[in-house]
Length: 235
Image (cartoon, rainbow, N blue to C red; front, side, top):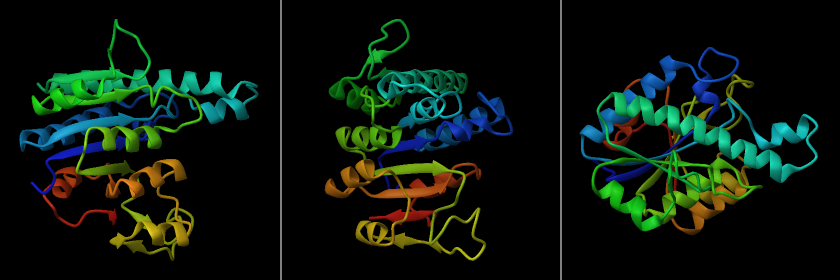
């Protein structure tokens, strides 16, 4: 395997599948199968998942909520719901998991402690980080970058419904072309939307490569950790 320890960032919206709200069990099952294939090859896997399929803080503010911090905390709880769903799907496939939350909720998750998270990974458990960073005004992309740096992951894998970074939005511009490799500096200069700037800068400063890839194509995750060309590498 090219990568020994990875952090996989999944969007909450990806869990929608064909639904307009909530979690599509078929998508959840597919993601569990993809992660199991990688774990079976000896890769240590940590996961951060968003909550946009249930609630996003920004949406709450746009919908009339006056308190952005309150809306963001609601979004963090949505990520925990998704994390618990993923945990259940993984354990159904026989994987050992640990859910670590940035907000204390002892009945359903362990509190996030960096050394404990690393120890779980070393023991072959899939570690799922819930509740973002535990602070409002930060996205789950930032949480993914932060946790990846903290656990000393080899790479941050951003699983999306698009197969990489393009010159423009491929869903809106048919002439958009995909990059195989691009530098952090080029992403900034060309104003490409890989992650929010806080998350992106954190990866850049800590020399943590990012790979943006299509998580919905079966086998992509395994191909990627084996070192094959999948998606776009930002380094």
